[in-house]
Length: 161
Ligand code: FES
Picture 1: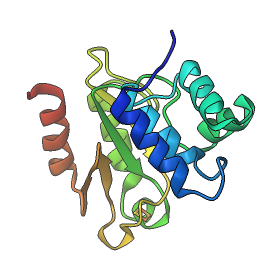
Picture 2: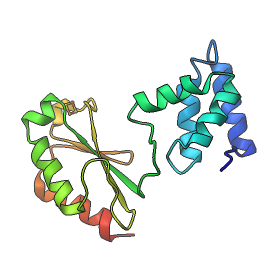
Picture 3: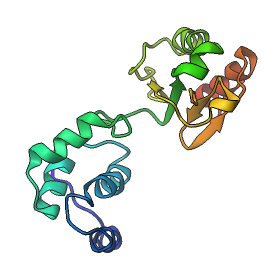
């Protein structure tokens, strides 16, 4: 399916392009904007759109999308849970948190619950090592996490709103 931005987001994209010294440098912020506008994932149509708009090879845009884990290559669930698994978090129980998430959500890392409410992911250091272990849920950090608190967070994601 074809992808297009609204007139307002087109103006935002123009402002992004104008802010950078060249179009290649504008590619990551352009992808973030288009991902947001596309239900939080970068479809092949979004890759084509960004490539055309920035006059870059589609392979370059695709390379960024596949390299950076903050770009979703599939449509995620309504909420995304990122479990940090780098050293500080690993030493303070990230594996246990992750196993608990997999069990409670009934999915493995990368998977989305059957009702499409939650996608489970892992992340490399989220720069909150002093409060390890931690997870990110959508845009929010949850730090110094215990299994009991994780349970409450997952319950809210699964059963509320
Ligand atoms: S290791 Fe988890 S936030 Fe840095």
